[in-house]
Length: 210
Image (cartoon, rainbow, N blue to C red):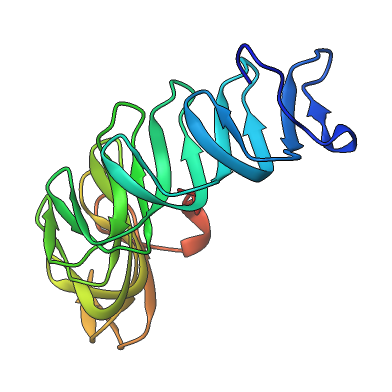
């Protein structure tokens, strides 16, 4: 917890194997830890003692994001990874919905949010209300509840995944489509390799985490 010991409930402390470094514990009372207002709840640290996840004790602004008094995730360098925004806001040029999670990379770049306005990622049009998740600078995953995501000739609803070159990798079709000479109906879930060829979904190993 820095220079001061963590006010952990004694029977809640879990340490990293072979060390006395706290991995997680439940705070007996709210505390200021590494510059964060942490509530009396579970807290998590990495092996170097950096705070990486907690429930905030109050609203606070972290790396320019106004965060609710809910779960906060941090990168090991102390930068914000994720929190639930208190209000609609612009994040690195993208319009994000309040009371939803906002995600930033380790260097502070945009990683994801639920959009309030249409956004385009390398030609892929993501509508308002959809969630967009970016990895390594390219769109990785979307989840559209209303209007579909437009990816070239395909319209994808629900959860969709994309290859780094922008090619849809997994898409629940919002309308009938012909892919590689094969006709698919609305609602079909189609998987494709990075070249656009239809493949079995089982051969693609998408990371479901953010």
